Length: 448
Ligand code: HEM
Image (cartoon, rainbow, N blue to C red; front, side, top):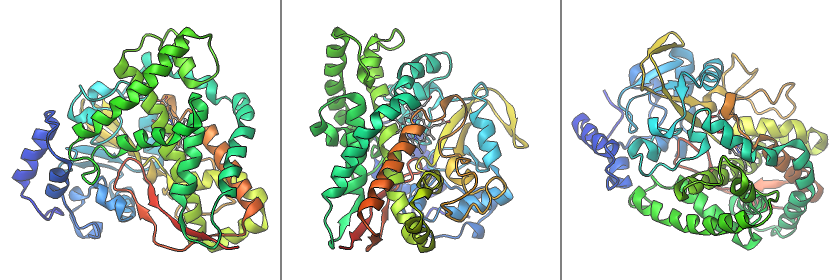
């Protein structure tokens, strides 16, 4: 019994072996066709060992929730042998996720062992996997993280806030009234693009380039965008040329407070090879882009789907600081992070072997009723809204978490000053990704 509709077990095994041996010519379309499923199948209708929440189609069609629910209830640390990303463990409960994330000596992030995403390029070919500190273990991870961490301190964020807010206000003032538009394109993308250009101190006119490169990383496996991941990679070399120019120039100038200058002057990063410069820049771009972008969009969607909460917000805008972490929990923009076991060990009563791949499903931990009261409800005035898995735990916990919250707070305060309601007037379109839980289109209308 299998949920795949187009291929035999043998065909899938052969294709996977080619892809995982580093054959970058295996086309994205070939993979998706061989592993095609009906995204609406009922996960309760198949044997437990076949349940596989990693399929990107489930996320595109928003049908992943029942798969996670079944796993949380029946097999919270679950082995799946036959996914399109090879065999892997799903960790779906809050406490087990926290355990994996805080035991980096048992569960490695290293690129050379497979990296932090199921099906990421690191799993296919190490030559393509860019070195970056999220895909390192200590000590290298800690040394490089410390280089950029000062950008995200509360003191620095307080200094950045007026500028970020002023830019948000300008975007909102320009929005059409009584006319449908895509909130993602007009607001979420613009806001995050501007924020990134500010953090790197590159011209604001280049913000869409940053977004385009970030999208390239996300779309490496999408057949609608790139025939093969190789094609996507060629585009990233434009990004390298762009940042190499600024990196070299800032090295020659006195240190200043932007991310490129910080990387260019610290001993831990100043001599990075071009691949590693590209990797760390991409980490900061993708880290700051998709996540915040999808939280901004996810908030508008969640409020429209829960009109009682929207009314509560309109009556009491002072709830914004509590609502922001609830939006982030609800959206869980990073659906999972992956790890590789460094040794045989026990996890949630199961025996994990050295080299096994493990996905921590943050998106599932955030619906775990044992850890979060009424986890399947969007409630903007929870008592303890920052208790969620969306930023991870341990040494890799999101370095930009306070920045993301600050930006969302600013956006919502500026929105409420201007508009009565942002109304969802069309069908949202999701993203076919098990890594970024995203929204591509959100048609809305602001009534005059
Ligand atoms: C709502 C917004 C955001 C969410 C949900 C989010 C989520 C995450 C998650 C889940 C991780 C990995 C945690 C782990 O492995 O334990 C992470 C790491 C990271 N995030 Fe974020 N993030 C957000 C915003 C940002 C922003 C605005 C930036 C910076 C511009 C950023 C930069 C990073 C970086 C550099 C890392 C790697 C940290 C490390 O390896 O030490 N993130 N983020």
